[in-house]
Figure 1: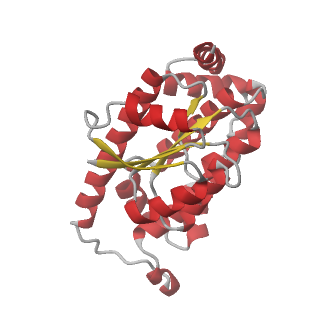
Figure 2: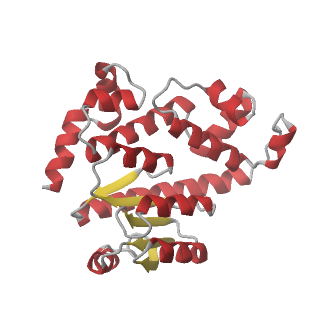
Length: 261
């Protein structure tokens, strides 16, 4: 069973999240419910959840601050944000923290259930790959002595963070490898083992996820959003977005807004 933590300061929403979704049927168990970021951190430390559903707007400690603290604790739980925010900066910060999924309030529970199932499948796939990866010895070592203190997972976490912070620029393998202090060939080996895709595929995926978040949660123009995730030409951005999602950025934004109404 995958472990799930629910976080929302509104008791009715928290109870609905716990009751409405068929957690057992999805192979998941709700191990904790919290109405504040502080309570959520305490539960997360004890339970080590695989998935966290959290509201983004909460008093004292908002959802993004909570996720940031979660990462500082070393937890890489997948996070699904419940959001009504319309700010570009919130989208960027969420992406930097590794939040790839979000649901706009008011919650459409069928859509939420579908996303939770997708995330669950992704978590299980990652767990399987990590188990397989850890069972196969690597006969290459990190070339620089000080990097001997970092595990492959730590190196790839640094790479993922650097990529998320530079989606707007033209980044390449050598640039990221140099940034974390390893060779390009070793970087490619670790990257493929960790993410099960090529560097270009991963960067494209992250850019499109960022664009989807911004299209849903901001009123920025499509051209500005495209530029913000590294596509300076709107036509090329539209082409890549359509290939990844099956619809144009405008169609995606219109559909998301229609679902909220």
